[in-house]
Image (cartoon, rainbow, N blue to C red; front, side, top):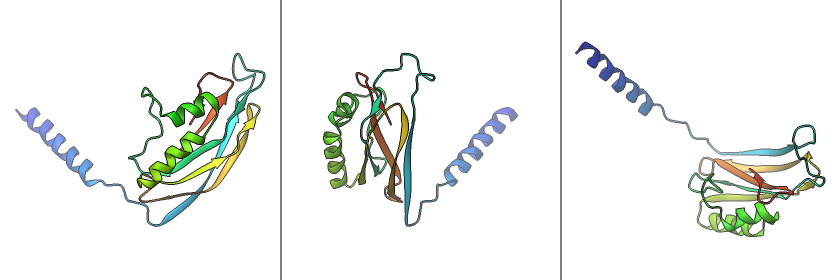
Length: 149
């Protein structure tokens, strides 16, 4: 009986600690620079292709209610086009819809590059308490449908 009381008390105590600890929201706006650094080389990867490259890097700042992709869930046309074709047009349109629905805040695009190593930076990525998340994607090629994000 004493053990049951101790366990019950521990659960209640733990639950009260968890429920009383709340994340503190960001005040104002923060701006970040995102740098995509590719390290895809013959030395680091078997079957390294002769013409490696990455498509444009695209993304947005958004709320938790917008999810660009989820592992195991069928991709949107926009994500599919980036992964299979390196084309970001449909995904940029999808992000514009999310911006109109107030689920995303701003979208961003940076150039792709040829070669397996290199970097690209996107500056002034804006987040705030309403749109605290960012998601980005780029095709890794040649591949049938791979992407990095």
